[in-house]
Length: 261
Image (cartoon, rainbow, N blue to C red):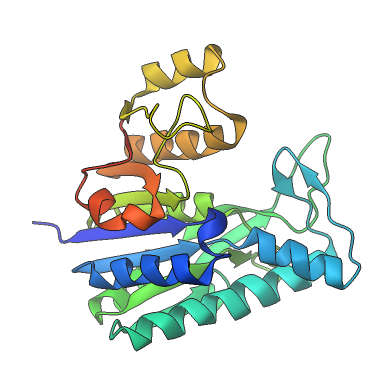
């Protein structure tokens, strides 16, 4: 029988609010068994870029990562945010290790190729080294993953954290009974972004197509749902989208939006 594994991607304003982050990490530390935390941190990177007078450009919700922006992303994501989370988890008696995809070649990627847009040093994932992750989990370490990867030539790449969580979940689903949770500031997938009461409790491929065609899913949620459906189609047991501050309930499957193929 496979051991269980929870892979949780945290984002949104949770990372920008220390009190909310502390509450979330307390709940994460209390989860029993194997667990991996994947984080982003876009707002802090943007603020740092502004202070350094480095212009930022977003296309289709994704950051254009030029050479200077890559330096900022690496410092903020793989440095300050990652190690802050690791330190807080260790203080909660939850032994944790922080890595990026560049560490031990754990996540290999290539520079994004697009016919019309040059995304700069943005990476699309080629390979997740399951042995690296399995070894750390077997040593009872919680893994905290920053969204920086590398290519086979040693080039660092800024990579979408949602996608990293999805690819890790897919790669480890052959070894563990894997649950993937996207945790952010909303209750789940909402029909009205400003009304937490209009929650979609469950989404399948067919329901997603219908809601998307009717314009009932806001644009920022579409990639999350697409990632979730791809993950469940590739062997991930369950994908849940919901409130980071309700993590215990999300892990128990009692809140949020559940995604299935």
